[in-house]
Image (cartoon, rainbow, N blue to C red; front, top):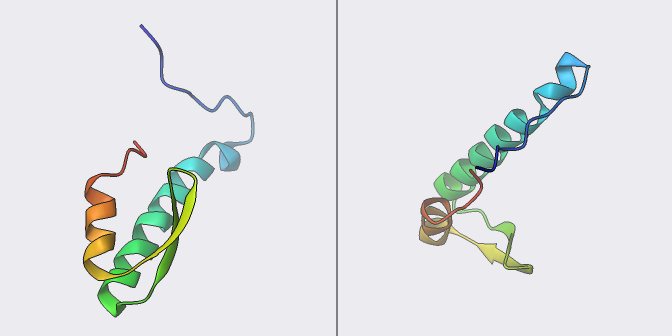
Length: 65
């Protein structure tokens, strides 16, 4: 069985960076959706500007976790 990657850095602040970046990304998408602001994302190595419902779809199909 493959174990998930775990941050072994001795600095406690750096151990929490990944979770903080994930939260900030989710919040940025939520705010962009609410304000109908374009958000540039990378999908399959391609840069795309997404708005509104496209962002909802991207969140539903995200494989970040």
